[in-house]
Image 1 (cartoon, rainbow, N blue to C red):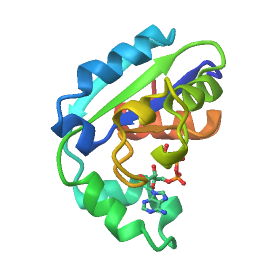
Image 2 (image 1 turned 135 degrees about the vertical axis):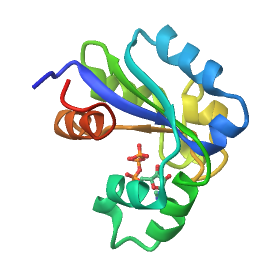
Image 3 (image 1 turned 90 degrees about the vertical axis):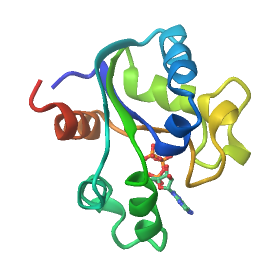
Image 4 (image 1 turned 135 degrees about the horizontal axis):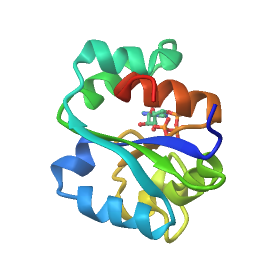
Length: 136
Ligand SMILES: Nc1ncnc2c1ncn2[C@@H]1O[C@H](COP(=O)(O)OP(=O)(O)OP(=O)(O)O)[C@@H](O)[C@H]1O
């Protein structure tokens, strides 16, 4: 399994507000190579599958609704130490806690509409990348 890859999504609020280019620029400036890239609409069913790990959380239904509310951009990124470095680049889940210079500090609107997703482990990076791009 590749340990130098991670998976990201640009979430519906950021796509809707024309921040695809700004976010991809920050990703590339952060030293990541874009390996795969796709703009798509997630059905509620697919969004629910992607976030199945959160099925018992109180925000799950809203999260599924939000993630299927408009197009998203899915991407596989490559860099040494990709998972940890990308989590650092995106910043805290709640933008109120995100540090200056992070993607969420610049683009996130709320703890839910927080502009981007980043995988939290090598294992999940592989699973999530496969969810969108098959077994590459
Ligand atoms: N308390 C909350 N209220 C509303 N939405 C939330 C809340 N906590 C998390 N979320 C939403 O669910 C997503 C997944 O939550 P998780 O705890 O895995 O955060 P994360 O790992 O920082 O985010 P992601 O998995 O999207 O990178 C968050 O990115 C956010 O969109």
